[in-house]
Length: 427
Length: 206
Ligand SMILES: Cc1cc2nc3c(=O)[nH]c(=O)nc-3n(C[C@H](O)[C@H](O)[C@H](O)COP(=O)(O)OP(=O)(O)OC[C@H]3O[C@@H](n4cnc5c(N)ncnc54)[C@H](O)[C@@H]3O)c2cc1C
Ligand code: SF4
Ligand code: SF4
Image 1 (tube, rainbow over the protein chains, first blue to last red):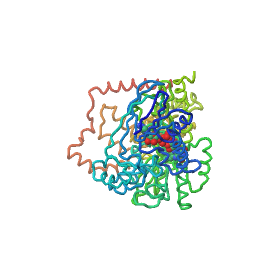
Image 2 (cartoon, protein in one colour):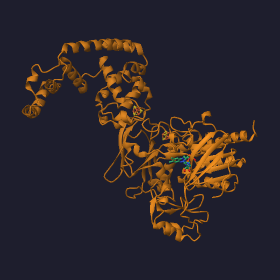
Image 3 (tube, each protein chain N blue to C red):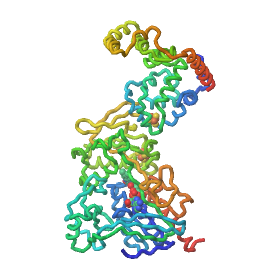
Image 4 (cartoon, rainbow over the protein chains, first blue to last red):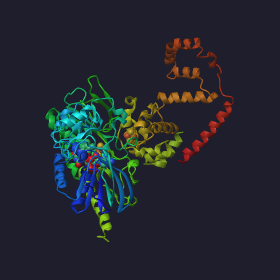
């Protein structure tokens, strides 16, 4: 790996989702020197796992492509994938950071021809599809992956599969001797953009996510709708592959609940409204949607989208937090509860139930390599005590892409101010 | 205790919520309810209630004093705690149900023939006599709770079970005359009397 130059005028961005990419690009395009580290083999983060974006229903890959173009064209930005921050010492304007890079076992020669993937037999749960499908032990993380380079799963190293992969590669790109690499660098400011992770649905015991195959999460539903997903874009339910035409969405699954996440995850109302349109798009009038909610939180201009979906007679809104889910004999999840508008009791069967799962910070409060001040939900605070460590996107709060990107730009500006102070170009 | 009812109506005029907050165990939680409905949906006896907990909370806020306090709903609670466990706002719903029932009883508004209320009374009266529950007397009293005819019917139906219990020494027929108790039953009654006086003084002040 080529030498990395970094000084206390360098900005380190941790996490290569849409927020980290944005923060890194904004700073780099202002002429600052930036290092962007990403834990997984490819950047893009969780938006790469969405089928469409609310409110315009455009494809996330489109915005991602624009950012990748900006990234390729920028000499100030250095990207390190499969890398995490192991340690941070120091203070604003002068941090010593230790980066740890996992071996990819495949070097820059890779043309993404896919010969190694064909040669390898072992299969593993596909992270990109939230485990709904399988991928090979030599794989491209997803169709849009950047860098477009294969990866060897460390679990095949030392097996015949690794040798088979090496033998299959015509470009001499496979290097089975790659080791973990550790580097220590100096940087002036750090932008934390490690994003979010879906709340563990199996903790919501009455909903039976761990017991009923046809109770899935909203992030999994995005993968079912995506033509690049495990079902080729067909809405097929897990238990028997039947088309899921009658779909229920359960809002606040884990959010706004003192037993789980106290905060409102803010995006899940909009996500379910959007996913309701997926059902209607795929099945037209044969599609039926029921949204069980406490109250719909579609704020500001995005309420137009809410109103549009609400006008659809095939989308029913039931004001009720579902009490529990059971399963009938044919595998249909049956949702039980009381409707707040009239206090009527219901027990309704659906083909599929989607839990509009909450967002929690991907890095737990006690897992940061340096002490940072977080709020009671674990999101990073904008606080003097954090020195020159700034949060971007969902590291700072549960946000949609629009707000995540705004927050990323703000964090880039804050980091730039620190760097300018260090460089003496600002008073 | 109908007088206290008049006093409370006067004191809280238009704010039943405030009255509940000051007088009902757990009452200060009522305003925290966000009407999600998960308590009502989680109640195993839910279909037997006229007004599930969520609705009671809304009625309290809406000032439906009479309807709430004379309702049989909160008497249906079996203390299964399903609602407490699931409430996203940590409301101690079970306790509030009992608190409401208790307050209604104190004001003399509780429905007279509500079976849970009747049972509670029988149980209490039985217990305070000797400081121990006399199961035989309690059982027989329960049979006759709804009148003589029904009592005889139930007693006949339960007779074989009673005989079996006698045979296996699970029931002592002598308990019906006298029965066992604690050493100082009079002392217990004095304690309870005092406690009641303190409680009443507090209730009057609230
Ligand atoms: C079901 C659902 C549907 C949604 N639909 C929409 C929509 O239609 N429109 C919309 O605007 N928003 C939508 N959102 C919200 C959207 O997903 C987020 O706003 C967006 O992903 C935020 O991006 P981010 O970069 O902040 O975080 P992330 O996407 O989580 O990116 C974080 C990145 O950091 C990396 N990382 C994590 N930990 C480390 C570490 N320790 N070291 C290095 N790197 C690390 C991760 O691998 C990842 O690449 C939806 C959310 C859900 C749950
Ligand atoms: S955005 Fe909607 S579904 Fe999500 S936590 Fe908030 S209210 Fe609940
Ligand atoms: S579960 Fe809690 S918040 Fe929800 S309606 Fe019942 S008392 Fe209110």
